[in-house]
Image (cartoon, one colour):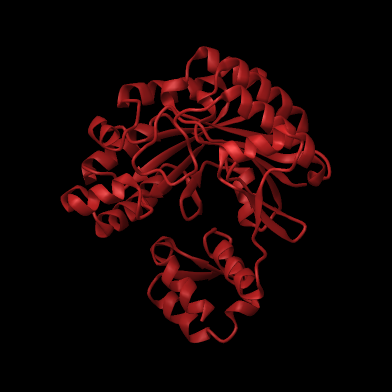
Amino acid sequence: MRGLYVHVPFCASRCSYCGFYTLAAGDQERYLAALLAQLAREAPLLGGAAASIYLGGGTPSWLAPAALERLLGFLAPRLAPGGEFSVECNPEDVDTALLARLTAGGVTRVSLGLQSTADAELAAVGRRHDAARGLAALDALVASGLRVSVDLLLGLPLQTPASFAASLAAVLARRPEHLSLYCLELDAEASLARRFRSEPGLDPGEDFRADRYLEAHARLAEAGYAAYEVSNWCLAGGECRHNLAIWRGGEFLGLGPGAHSRLGGRRWSWLPDLAAWQAALLAGAPAPSEEDPPDAQALALERLLLGLRTREGLPLDEPLLAGHADFLVRCEAQGWARRAAGRWQLTPPGWLRLDGILAALAS
């Protein structure tokens, strides 16, 4: 079975690090009408019920209550029995009414954009919640019975070893089943990237990010969380099934402006233009899209990347590893990789060097 991703492009405001297609304003009802038209048009490509549904953005939890209820009502029947239904939420939106709405709508898992528990760091990047609101939202989610994932960012302005350790400790004290820790990566034109260029002292730097990343691996392992992907940890059985299927090369249909799809050997994306996307669909036409057919070299590079970024690694008989025996041994000697159960897997220090290792194997 295939996965279904739905992109909600709306946010109350744009964070200074964001590189996704998001808008701070828009007609939600018009968006929803276009989305439901696209769902009706494209859903047959799934070939049946979806193994997982992921509602991302943007900020799905910022949708008006009636719009969110209607959207969930259209999506939930397309989920296979026992499937995973994830929704991204921001802390300032989480209250008892939202939790009831999500539960009634068939949602099984929430990804909370906490990012930090330091007020200065949150304010520096334009987050709308403070630490107290973020932790209250996390407490409510954990108590709700939904599966919970928490996002933290590493390398925020003003972040220190102590503040990062405190954020991690605050999350672990509440025992969500999943944690995503993303090292801050910025598009050159992101407002935070421009600010770092003008105020370099605000950027904690690459060494800081590397040290804290390895520190997080040690602390999370002590707490019983397993690293199953370069940026993701979970308690036993807590993997994000939607993302894991994609990392394993599975197929998925994306809906909404800017969403990508990978189905039947075809790759394409809907153009990130809300107005054009809506106009086409509401006129009964397909949304404007862009094909992205991969060549053999791109497919090989993708296979390497998807394998190396997960704890499963690559089988030792993977043809793409052939001819690199000396390099594999050097990585193992440095502690960057290991061999286990007939597979070649990167270690946490190796994940820090993923781009370089990938480049060497692709050459």
